[in-house]
Structures are given as structure tokens and as C-alpha cells.
Length: 474
Image: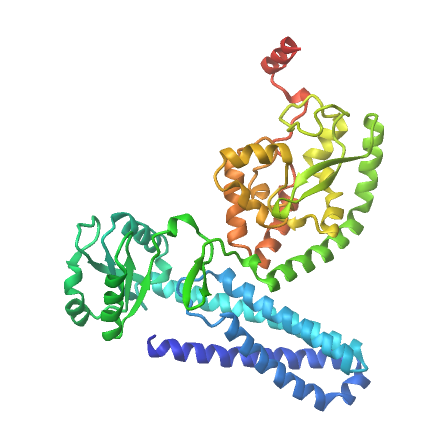
């Protein structure tokens, strides 16, 4: 690591400490205005608590990876960790306050004010820093010079593709060392010349990208890099199999790669997502209750049958659960296995209306409260189609590693109703592998603007030629 990297990390910690201290002081003053008598009685205690929490927060940021080099990580990585640490510290402080202090309202007001202010300012600071550094690197300054060690055209292409797609990373590949011809890169020499080449070129990093190589050779290459004081990284040959954040685990003394590691593997992330689901679903049930009452009356008057439509779907870990919707179709024999399509003749006029504006989905907030679903996640499918798609759609079953959702990335991208299942699965897997709390928030905020189901059409919308075909089929 270059000296200025250590200086940047130290400076960032000091700035964060000042920001947290300043927001605690502002929260302190705000609480004093709200609760003047309690403020005067708790000045000394709050100052000492503030110092402790500020230092503890910076330590927690460091442990969570907030001060990691900002070269290849995305902003969502750092923002997610800042908010997770802040929320954890908030919960910890409020729990202790409820046990130790008598004036809980005062501490609650102070803590919430501090949490909101510090989260906003720290996120702004971090994203601003990343934006500045990315612009600097894109203009070919603060560049890392990389030597690629490879005998594989495919692996070299994989690595170079990422370098070209992300100029803001600030990597410059000066060439490759290897024993076979690689197109598109300057050949610097063979693996036997590695030591002399490193002494001559002095790259910042060496990246090994082999499909097959003997362990003895890998050990030799790493040893040569170590002797020259040059950082060495390895691109695993299985990189095409997974795209999520990798996690190295220990099997005794043997390191192993967790290929399917995802952000929601961590208990803190699952807790944050579940807590958000419970709070938001309760709030949305209350706010949408007039609409649900209107929908219930409309369904009852539109056709004979129950108000709610119940159907078995496949949820997390392949568990079967019952999903709730407002009934949008006439009661029929295909309810358990039939997939709704455009121009579906089973839909009522009112059913077509509530489907178009996604009103039929509102009872699923009760599924969220029960724990069967999340507000954001892959849409759950019927058992019949899960058995069908698992045989024909690559990686289909990975969507069941998380709770299914009312809305999701595929839905806000317009993949609703009778649309490509392959594209939906691609979107679902991307969401699972790149989950952050902010990503969920973004999807939730975009959902009302995407709530209109453009694919939803009633029998009257059917083109005349298709209408005639349907009549002839009957």
C-alpha cells in the first residue's frame, strides 16, 4: 500500500470522528430545546457518552470495511455498511438507555436525531470522496500499474473486460507474462523471466489468471512477487460461475471459497431487512386500508365467489406457503395451476382494473407480516411452474434462497405478467447477489411509479384477429 493510502484512511477516520461528534452535539442541543430540564440535569453524562459512542462508531466502521481502499468497490458497499453500523449502534444505545436511564424520552430524541444527521452527512461525505477519486482515476491520475501473469486467452479477456468497463478503478495493464500467445496484450516475457521483469518494471500489482496451473508453480510465482515486495492477486478459474461478493472461509487450515455467498447470509443484514419489512408492512396496511375496502367491495360485486384468492406458492428454502390476493377472475378450475396471460378471458372487468394498478397485491402485506414474504424480493411462483422451470431455466432455484417479495427488481424493470422468465431470473439473481438496504429502498420508492402493469390487458383489448381465433377455438 502506498503511503498516501494510509494517510487517506487516517484522515477519513478523523473526519468521521468530527462528523459524529458534531451531530451528537447538534442532537444534544435539539434534545435540550425539546426537554430543557432534562438537558440541564444530564449534561456531563451525555458528553462522556458522546465521546465513547463516537470512538466506538469509528472503530465499528473500520471493522465493517468502511475504510477499505475505494478503488474497485461500489458506493452501495460503503453506504450499506455505514447505515448498518449506525443502526446497530442506535439499537445498542437505546437498549442500554431503557435499562440504565430514567428519562428515556430525552435519550430517544437525542439518539434518533444523531442517527439521522450522522447517517446523512457520512453518506454524503463518502459518496463525494468516491466521486472525486473516480474522476481523478478516469483522467489517468492515481493509476495502479498491473502486470498480468497468465497462459489463458479466456481468463485474460475476462480480466481486461472489467478493466475497460471500469476506467474509474484506475488500473493500467502494462502487459502480460506467460508461455503462450495472448491477443490484445503486450508480451513482456516468459514465466521463467518473472523475477528479472519485476525488478525492471516494478509494477504495483501482479494478477495471476490461470485456467490450469500446478500448485508448485503458483507457489513459485507468489514467492517471486513476495521477494520483490509486490502485491499479488489471483483470479480464480471458476470466476464465470459466480458474480456475487466472494467469501473466503477456513476448513481447518485450508482456505475455501464460498461460491454462493450473498449479502443476506449475514444475520445483521437479515435482521435489518426483516425489521424494515415489519415496520413498512404495518404502515402500508394502515395507509392502504381504504383502498383495500374499496377493492373488497368491488370484487364481491363483480362476480360470485370469495373476496380473497388463495394459492400455494414456493417460498424461501422451497417452503410452500399460501399467498393472498384480491380475486380478479371468475371462479374456475385452473386457479391452482393456470398462468394468467394477456387478454385472459377469465378476468372480470373489475379484476382487470385492480391488476392493472396492482391493487390485487395489497393483501400480500399480511404475508409479509407472517414472515412468508418480504416487501422486496423475487416474485413467488406456483409449485407446478417451479417444477417445470427448474429443469429448463439455468440457476432458477437460486431465487428461493431469500424470501419472495411483493415487488422486486424485475417488476420495476417491466418484467411482469406474461414476460420472459429467463430475464426475470437474471434480474432476481442480480438482486440477491447485490442486495443492500439502500437497494431495497430504491426499489420500494420506484414501485409506485411502475405500479401500472403495461402487460395487463382484458379481453376487449384483444386484437380482432386473435378474438376471431379464440371464437373458432371455442
